[in-house]
Length: 164
Image (cartoon, rainbow, N blue to C red; front, side, top):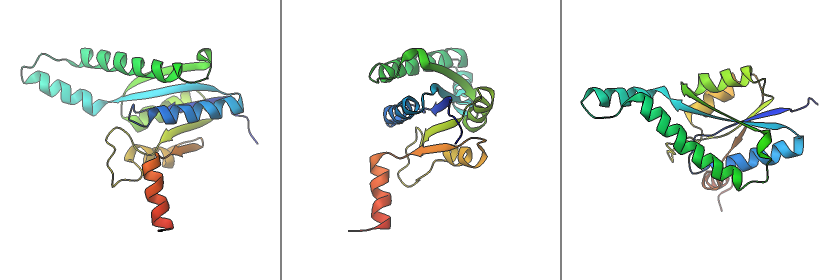
């Protein structure tokens, strides 16, 4: 079996991010691997800010990206602080772009051995069991991908398989 030295944990900063991080951290501890936390600010969101700015509102993409990074870094700091994973073994990368492309590019550039991610992102649409980003990463990833489901989704899936 191959060694796992670096695990990427993809966080969308949804309600499930803490659980996803904790799962990846536990796995990394057991495998003696480092963690690279990756968050991609969707370029569609940045484009929307540019459109709003063009309508005369005082907002621009540079400040939007800066503020999102600060806000999400603060959330991540809280998640990391609440875990037992050593902070010196965590590397954080924030990117702007297409989440699938950026995540896969980081996986290759960082020589990741595995990706841990949730099945849904920030939209949390109840009728979608696997989000489009997760689905595309599963199909295109050069490394194994572990998907985590929140408890609500897992229970729905159990009920479909074995209704009580």
